[in-house]
Image (tube, rainbow, N blue to C red):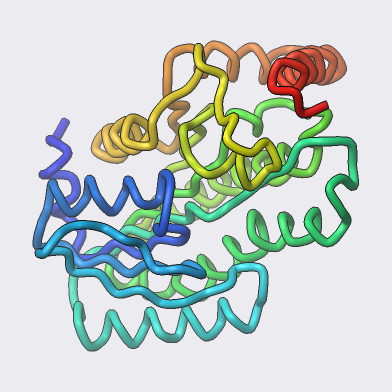
Length: 272
């Protein structure tokens, strides 16, 4: 298996969504450290603040919940690639996403609908617009799903359903793309020390300590899976066990178990 640097050197450009914080920012920081000459194109509402004088970063302001914004951003990505990096394989990382805790439709219906737009529609829209370029140049699509994708999760009903879509869509797309020079990798992290929990309404109380991973750890394991040519990786051995258990259990039992886990977590965090 090639080293992480060797694996990343096969790409000239990384196009990433949500690189301003969390796992997305860690992808940029670690990628730039491993391959300083690599170009990065970040699509998010705010630009990432990364301390690196050698970072080749283009930020494109984009609201993935709005189709017109995705269309404009995709066109800007194509222009950037044509002008700055006209050759070489592309690594597309669909990382943007958010969730919420509570009984549907808490905290409100617009929040739930925006989650669908960002976690699903924006990801599919951007990938579809950039796929012809990826096919012409070669590349890999990394879609960040979640361990929540493996079972229905009460109190996170919409979020877990969106991530189940991302996981299943990624695996099916990978099969369809065989022979095209493009492949996909679905990354399924568990609780991670990022802004996710604050956005979901849990304030500064972030993760379950026994399961928590840093964004850097998630990225490192994702890049190892990329180097190995995998189509799916669940980061963290404890998360692998929970994913297997959730995926293999009868759906009603998996739903009941997930509800108990989330309820206990929310009680401990004082969120319910």
